[in-house]
Image (cartoon, rainbow, N blue to C red):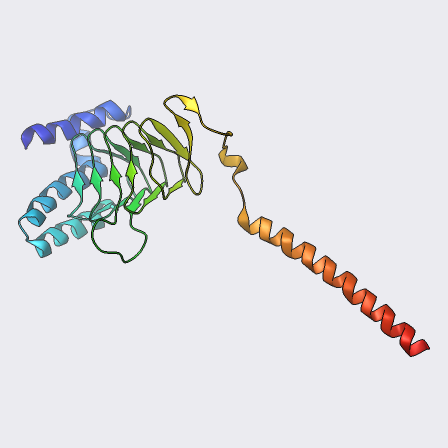
Length: 219
């Protein structure tokens, strides 16, 4: 356990250039506090002390802004950068050397039973605000772009971006067309354009009806 706690501290120095001293990291890094609280809560959870485990996780959530269900399985050298708003579900499984940023959700898609949260393999990076939902797997060495919503399996060594998430790089090779965040589709705007076209057609039909009625009245 002490070896794992030491690794949790050392990964902060590896991942965060702003970290200056052990004392600073231990006392002020909420991501580290959330991970340590989870390791304790998870130990109680495995012993079926569910209330105590949940109480610890909720106290941790209050102080850190990070919610990790005590049932989640988290590997070694897990790093939460900043962390506010991170949510990790009960059946989530996270491998080693995984990094997540603030606002990330590893959640479910409904009220289904059993395995309903994602499995995150080793060496994965999930960027700010990304959502990975459902019982899917994000393969080793993959990256999920900021703000992406991932609903399908992600192969190993891939980069996923967009809503819904699409693989744009796999094994170092671009897949399909480039998907830039500034060029993401806007379904709301598309629907408005369709409605505007339909309204214009209805106006033309209405004008035709008025003209036809005018002719009939005149005759």
